[in-house]
Image (cartoon, rainbow, N blue to C red; front, side):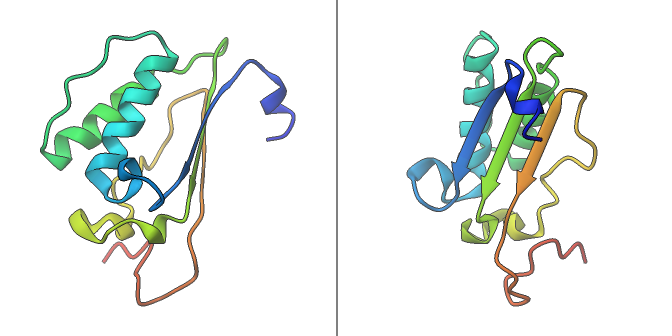
Length: 119
């Protein structure tokens, strides 16, 4: 990834649970959609309160990344998100990323939190 960062890529780094924009899943999705729209000179999106629609919007925004302007997302401490909307299960993350998007996600290894628990 270090070599990739030398390209003219755009980075979004989120330290989850540290700001109003990163305490719960809905606010995080809103923040990511707005940030990606800004990076790719898109109009500010109108965002739904429905979590499913927010996830769809994020997937749509990720497709804006291009070979000329790749996108790198760093989501640190997913375990710090509120458990609302089953955020810790991480079903909201795309199973497959669009071309020119890379994502790094971190969490503490705590079975009680249930990160990556898709049951």
